[in-house]
Length: 173
Length: 173
DNA sequence: TCATAATGTGTGAGTACTTACTTATAATTG
DNA sequence: CAATTATAAGTAAGTACTCACACATTATGA
Image 1 (cartoon, protein in one colour):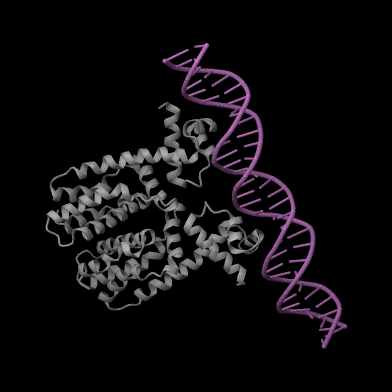
Image 2 (tube, helix red, strand yellow):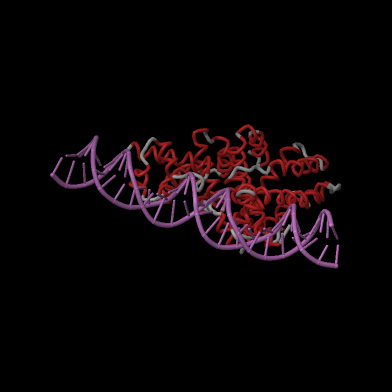
């Protein structure tokens, strides 16, 4: 992948994340990337193709992130890693995360499939720890973590930080 | 407010909710409402003005909905009403709710101000019930309820229904 | 080894179509 | 008849995408 090709991808990611897919015209992406507009279409065929390329990267990134948790064999560690995950997100990755939330609602790209193995692992952990209704516990915690992640992206880490130790206490971690 | 004026509003609400603000051109709204395109601009000045008019209605609707909870004096009842609220949303109001979520991310219209009195009331209820960290409890429950509401809108009531009794049990209601 | 063909990267100027908004003018209402 | 509601036909700017062409890199073959 050439340098300009990567620049297109990162510019599109940033602009889609901050302004939304439909709100960003391709000429704006080109300008931001310091590239002729035609090059976008040479490399990615059309605007949708550009988004798809970003989504592929996103899928890989998300998979890598959750792999760490899914591989964990100690159920307590699974919960601990899951809960602390959103608080560890780096500022440099905000665009990436913001885009996930934006697309979920703007284009109704679910992201559910991506999450399912993670939720399953949560359920497994709750089961191991003797919780009564592991599936519901897992879905509940997932809602919670998504809410916290969204809060961090929109209002900053500080707005949600107090919830970290609070949650860990709640789950006896 | 004339009949056509209302039709414009309801059509715009439906289309914005299902497809997103930026994805829906004004001529499509006019066609859907059975109205000439110019009429939209006569009544609402521009596309943003049309959205603003919807948002005013939304604010009133949300305020009315939460008023019921905020007026409640029994803390247990406050929690009960808050938790059951998302499960009581009628299908006819899905567009309205979906738009809230869509705009929150597509246009970054927070909706936080709308919610604050509700969150404050949750905090009050937790305080009354002797919870240790009422503020964090309130924010946690709010995240949870938003997650559930979002789930209902995207995946249907059935997908989240089991969580209702589960949550009520968790909070001893 | 070196001309040359082939392929891939990149540009800038289009093009066909869409989109938000305007305006002149008609119909309706009070 | 005065004001308001409504329309149909614009218009200027924007938008996704194409295309002809230039430049660079690599592959081929005498």
